[in-house]
Length: 259
Image (tube, rainbow, N blue to C red; front, side):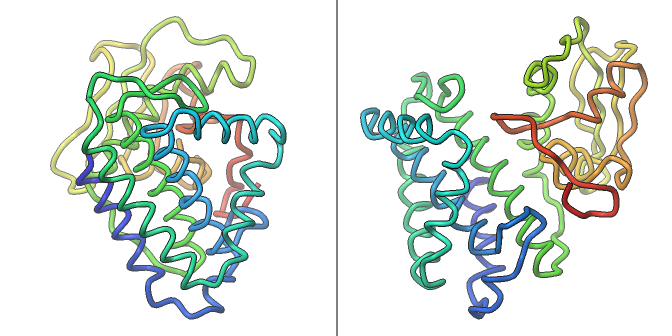
């Protein structure tokens, strides 16, 4: 898991390592966020994860700051980092990734650490960091006009998306489906199928793993993706799916634009 997280960060690093200053200012599909905002947000959340693993009191202070400005703290954190010179921001992001990687490797696998949602074990935290790194990396790639080749690391993103099904309903105040879904996703290499849920479940979701991951991270509208559902609850899920904690996101409009 740690190796996959490192690889995801390194792949995104390659996109911005030699990016001239005007490139850092390019707008991404997230309204009001530039490439610099995306990297600054990852820097901020990596620091939060590091504190959760190593300094519970320090993390509690971050939570208190978030509770004091629940509608602004994410944007404020991104804006603060985006105001730095690109070289300084890149240095901070790299240093934070290195420190977090070491903390994850040294963490006990059985201990749950505090987070903004339920406490998480180190493996789950690493998986969540990979999901967010990949999703914000997609925003950067879209801004720069780069098409990234999908990898088997998407398995981590897909798993979170499947496990977050009930949360997606609950956060919108909708009844949570009472039965499990069958999810069948074609791996990026086209040679394997990633499956979740009972094989005989009547509610089903199928499609390419990449498309499913774009859907649950709300980086693309379902109309632009090859993910299909069978069953009323499964159809509704594809309209609201989200792999991230927090309020329901606005998602994207068809055609790739922001909502």
